Image 1 (cartoon, rainbow over the protein chains, first blue to last red):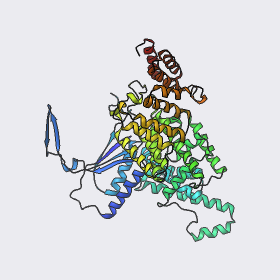
Image 2: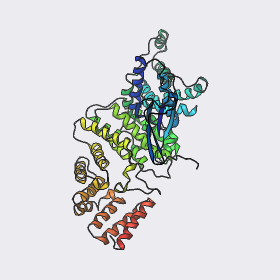
Image 3: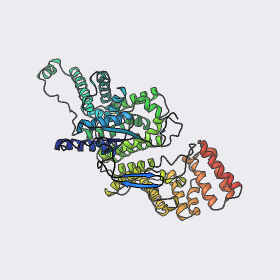
Image 4: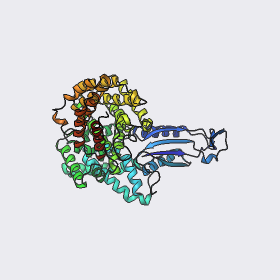
Length: 118
Length: 415
């Protein structure tokens, strides 16, 4: 099962990450990549551009955007066996980075029913 | 809580068992000690919460149990007063204690030990899934369509065989290494194929075996980065797994490569497969069977549509494969590739030579391939017989229908 772990809190008001934290994070990323768990990861700019399709018309604007708190600023695509494993990985991530917020969503693959019970 | 403990276990089992095996030199005992630690976690974590570093917690408990166990053994072996002195001074234990720096070496030792050729293939598979994948006996049983007691028995016997044979906990070097490595790769690929052949109605645990094998392969590739065949196997599995979504039709019928919707192939896995293949090639050794099979899979993956397939390249890769690792199945595949690259006549020559091959008796793809080549040569009646033959052999109902349809089309004379 694949999960997309997204961090939504950009911590922009906080102090920049210290050296020790970066080292620890580097180690975490290396370990999870080696374990075949982490498939891709990256940071995202807080806003970007907004694209809207409405009635066949495409509009590209510089906003408006949701609050910084709701904007996805980083992601990790992981391949694990259960949702709990994804949560456990996320827990370890926050043990390293400290305060923050995130969302964990399953990425549907073959055989996954996006609408169970319907 | 049970689910989060399970999650931690699955992520950490291999490292904990491997670290403890370094201390006790017996993977069976190491696994029991690790299980004890897991039981302790199940008792304590609901009260205390999951510790900050759950892997280290489990390892610490396992270590303590291992030291207790080793001291008990020493007490049996030595005079009590001697050991009593040691215990009082509380000198650091003279055991080889696991640490972070060596843990990866230990995991590699665990892989080689669990896949030791002294064990039957089934036993190797069960031990590998249990010790490196952290699967329960029940999950292994469900995945391999067998009963839990059978798997439990198999594991107990395998552990005993390893300790009776005095298999050392080490990474083999020298001439032994190639044989031992191929035993490891065989186990991983077997697990992958067991999952790959799972069909829609099967338990999800079965299909998950593909994931499990991929994960084991990826771990092994980091533990033994200098082995081209490890990267070859990883590349092969990544690229084969990339077709999962496209290779079965709506009613569970297998969709042949040529008819698959390539838009449904998983680009991420293809990309990973190519990367693994490049790592294998960068080592600069003559390609082994897994690297060659991966190269063939990569060649297919590179074709935007079936008609863009570079059959010349694939036929020559099969030719090398047939010389490096000859087998009737490889020959049959070569027949298909040659038939596409150099015409059905040339392909049929190779396929016809396999008719009396005992290991292909009952293998429906032989008549199916011959039927296809005969049809392309306009030998309609013979082709029809071959398709009917193949249909009678396959156990997959949707596939049987496809084969019978082809036979019927030929009867109508429209092909």
